[in-house]
Length: 333
Image (cartoon, rainbow, N blue to C red):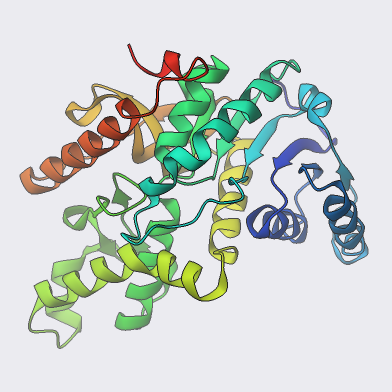
């Protein structure tokens, strides 16, 4: 995969639902030089969406942009494939746990990945579909690509939601907040409080010096509960989440294509980091056009490290519990 100057990068979006469509629109409005192909079983919908998206091109400031109806033969020329598709029946269960979607989506993801690879794809795959950590592992195993070239959105959206809420509560600029949510994009994810800062000041120091909060633990619990449930609540009330995740996809895409080596918390395959081995999970990484160039190991405190490893155990258990079909036999040793 190589970068050609003064030429649009090729992106294929698989899945033209709310997330895929919003991502395409947001990407065009960011004035990034891209050629976007969209694949979806509903050709009629894709055709209408492509026509609609083309009507935004006169408003952009970038002359190297295009949108078209794609099929799997087009992935051969793609730099990045973004999978946003979900099985038609996929929805959160009564337990409001994203892992409940795994059985519904895994066969569809296996077929999509097979179609991608049989058409000569040689770039980076970015997985959005939930449960994103487990499905990213499915995609990597089926594709046979290096783990560094198969990435999930991980806990980036969770992290952005956390920053937005902290900024609102403490009346600070979200860009001044640094820190991650790590682990599963789901119920077992956790906030890395020990390294979260505002304007380079540790959050506990900030709260003590610049706010009137007396009970930090109550605030922390409120923030954790918000991040854990807000995505499911939005999904329940409007049928999807789209704007936040689309913005995260643009951030990841721009980081990969521009080779700016930004550090983001995404789904990455760990091989001993944090005492975790053999599972995709949300952790900070350095990204460039080759995918993941480096996994960043944060010095977690004892309780955070335990939470991280517990989250990994939950994800590993779900991967091992997948029904062993011929397509999925390679997911277990």
